[in-house]
Length: 219
Image (cartoon, rainbow, N blue to C red; front, side):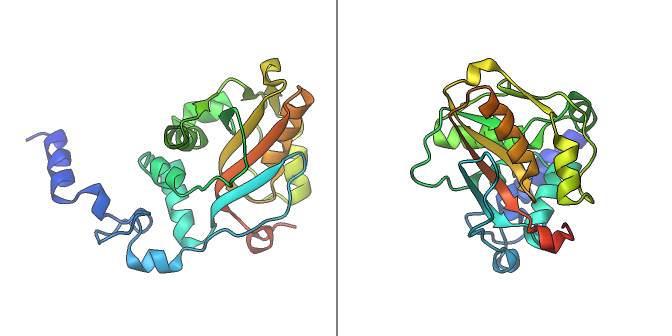
């Protein structure tokens, strides 16, 4: 029998909806796709420092052991189905009015290596839920910036300076930026700055997780 047959059989016997989105254990899960243990361990986002050039920020979760597993499995293990799970976790605040949803872009070299932009996958599912238009051409990443995991806040700002390019068609528009994780806010800030330099009226930002800089060792 083929591998494809066994994959189909596994999905029938162990449906994805009965597998925890974080720990991957087969278990009864809640509406967010989490088992009882992970549901108890998840930490909800409440507030975060303001981001320069951004008119409002929200997130679903605080970046911790439970939420980080979902993000990492999507980014590094190709678990694309988690993009919908993460998108469904984001609640857009009342009063936010925007024309299009724009994922934080990756450089084409990074996309070629990974095979996809995780923020774009999340944004696609969010657009379907909200009935909004996705625009992947309004903002592009022209610089193949270094990985920022171990950089200071100042280092992140330097790393991202002039890294993005906005299309002039953004003039007068209101935009919702989507990314998987926000730490210092440097990426959102540089994206918003680039859009507003080209006439964008408002830029909101939403992430699946907010990683508190002090807990990540970032100064």
